[in-house]
Image (cartoon, rainbow, N blue to C red):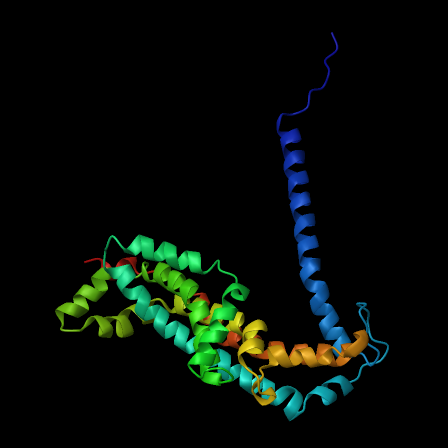
Length: 287
C-alpha cells in the first residue's frame, strides 16, 4: 500500500507567520516612505536652484537658497523671537506643571480624579474655539501685541497635558525617598526640587520636548496675538515665502525650513540622553 506524504502541521503556520511579517514590513515601509519623502524634498530642494514640487535630485548643487534666506529680517530675527516665545513658554510650563503635579501625585483626595479628568478634557478643546474670547481678554488687559502675553498663553495652552504627563512620571518615584528627606527636616518643596525632579529626569525631558515642539510649530496663536512684524516668530514669517497668485519660492522655502527645524533637532539631541534613563529605583527603598 503506497504511502502519501503529509505536510508537517508546522509548515502552514510558518508560512502564515512569514506572510504576516512581510505584510507588516510592507506597511511599515509605506509609512516610512510617507515620512521620508517630505524630508527628502526639503533637503534636496534647499540645494536645487530650480526647485519645484517634485522630489528629484538637483542637476547642480547650490547654496544660493540659503544665502537668500540667511538675513536678519528674514531668518535671524524671527528665529530669535521664536526662541524667546517658545523657550519662555516651555520654562513656565515645566515649572507650573511640576508644582501642580506634585500634590496630585503625593496627596490623596476625592477631587484628584475629577480634576485630572477636567485637565484631560481641556486638552481636547480646539485652539480656534477659544481664540476669540482670549483675543478680547488680551485687549482688555493690554496684553495684545506683547511677547509676554503670548508666552503666557503658550504656557496656558500646553499646561493641561503637561500636568497629566508630569503626574504620571512623578508617580514612578517612590514616596519613601521623600519620607526619609522629611525625617531629616526637608520641606515638601525641597524634596520636590532635590529628590523627585532629579529622579524623574526622563519625564521632565519628555514634557520639555513636547511643550517646546508644540509651541515651535504653532502658527495661529502668534498670528492672532502679535501685530508688529518685528515680533513675529519664524512659524508666522514662513508665510512670506508664499507669494501672490500662487507663486512660491520653493528653494528658499525649503532652505528656511531646514534652518527653522534646526533648533528643535538640537534640543532633542541635547536632552536625548535623559530619555534613555529609567526609574530603576527599586533597590533604593530596600533595607
